[in-house]
Image 1 (cartoon, rainbow, N blue to C red):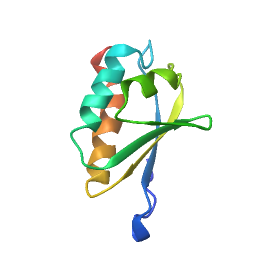
Image 2 (cartoon, rainbow, N blue to C red):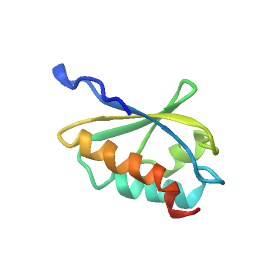
Image 3 (spheres, rainbow, N blue to C red):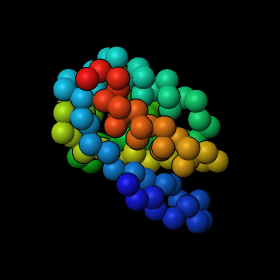
Length: 98
């Protein structure tokens, strides 16, 4: 759970591991997007060289976020730290499924 420096406008990043049994399917993707859209910052999700918007349900559904998958979240903007905190908490809470 390390953030990179935000000096010079760099994006903050955080690694998370998907813990809920069924991974990122429609309901968790919708919760993730709903949470991400509360923030002004640009949010991206990366896995295996694929990068999608954290504010796109379709993008999240294509990233293969199965249980145990490691994702890199990045946020760039005025509330980047708060956005990453909220999204990491959502993942740690297993999208309220388990």
